[in-house]
Length: 231
Ligand SMILES: C[S@@+](CC[C@H](N)C(=O)[O-])C[C@H]1O[C@@H](n2cnc3c(N)ncnc32)[C@H](O)[C@@H]1O
Image 1 (cartoon, rainbow, N blue to C red):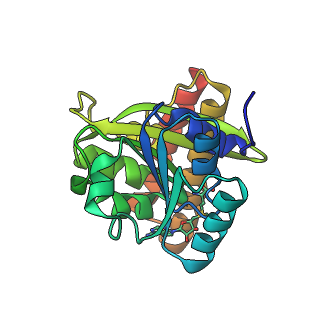
Image 2 (image 1 turned 30 degrees about the vertical axis):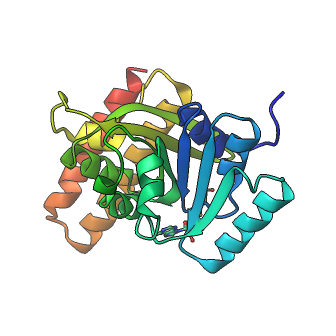
């Protein structure tokens, strides 16, 4: 039986982590994800890291209260910067969830300190297209992407690792990633992304009626809607 529980969003992140490895959860806050992974013996070791003192102390409390101090280690760190090199080199999986896509991309800019075969599990709350663009430009391949309903929200969870892209550089890819429009949550995520682009285009047109960005947003929104309707 599964010990503890996670929100649907964090549960999909947990399901995306490889089994039996050593995981670093960046921006862990309460360390719910690493504690769930360790408690259910889904991984060997976890490091739970956060940039801020409040979350670090929350993480320490969760780890201690669940008796996981021998398997989940809490580290205060700005992204990968303050993680000891021997820890970085031992990792099989790195998780970054619940942050903006740009911040996750910035954190991953130090990815060369990690082993070549490390797997990334990334859950951007906003600006996911900028994260996908970063992955695309940095030689990381999205190996799987799934979406999940959580309350009134829909989230995407990206799995990525080093590799070569055969995929063309296409706006649809930047906004819909590797989501399967036949999956209900993925379909909804794609439609909501299109809605956001349309709303942004309306705002842009109000301030600058001839805005080429507004036209571009509308064109991508239309293509995303067509893509979703295939599902
Ligand atoms: C909204 S919480 C997400 C918590 C958890 N990962 C989740 O998905 O539920 C974002 C956390 O990221 C941390 N954070 C922000 N920037 C960071 C950075 N550069 N390095 C590490 N942690 C960071 C914040 O302190 C905060 O605890």
